[in-house]
Amino acid sequence: MKKFLLTLLGVLIGVAVTLAVIAGAGATLWNTVDTDSSTHSSQVVKAVTKEEKVVLLALHMQGITSREQTAQLFGKTVPGTARNLYLQYEYTAMLGIDGSRVTITPTGEHAYSLTIPDFSFLGTSDVTFKKAVEDNGIISFVTADIDEAAMINDILGPSSKDKQIDDNRAALQSQARSFYGDIVRAIDPAADITVTFR
Image 1 (cartoon, helix red, strand yellow):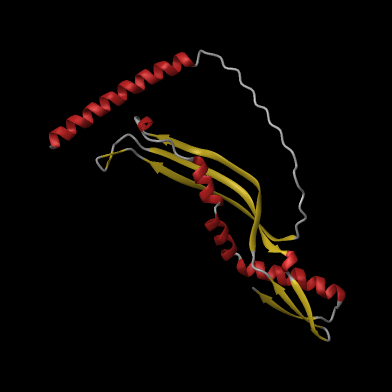
Image 2 (image 1 turned 180 degrees about the horizontal axis):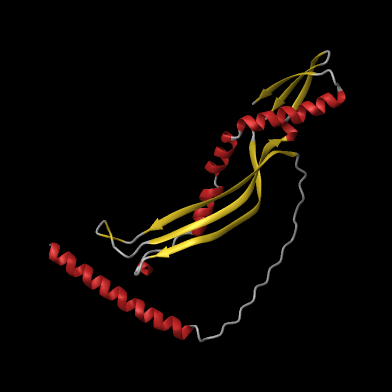
């Protein structure tokens, strides 16, 4: 059985190398053909909605993430089939609250109750993604391409957004107290404010 598997692996590698040579020759011929392409796009604003979102923190995020894929044969990794992609990213995450849900209630003379809603991920800006390194094995063409869109979704997905809120909850609470406290004290400088976070 072992001899059969080694023979099969040898045949597969031979076929893969032959296909790589044929693909390389075809690519060389194909690169001599000129192509002409054009793109057209149109955009229409269908609605404008007023929002009362309040950005309390802007986090400048940057990092690098990687993913590896290999071809499998009979449950075993085939040597030389690895695809590795390192994706560098950078963006600004905006965390805050829905200002329309903030309530300020007078509770006595110079006393106020301030209720702050749940913190939320309000959006991103200055988003850039680029391949930092792409490292593929000699017969990696038998392995499926790595899905860059899935990698980006992992970086900007719901679990990442929730983690950013959780990691910065103390700073968000401090900024909310300060921001709304300043608004109340602009009207009543002697205000005593009790803050509740939902």
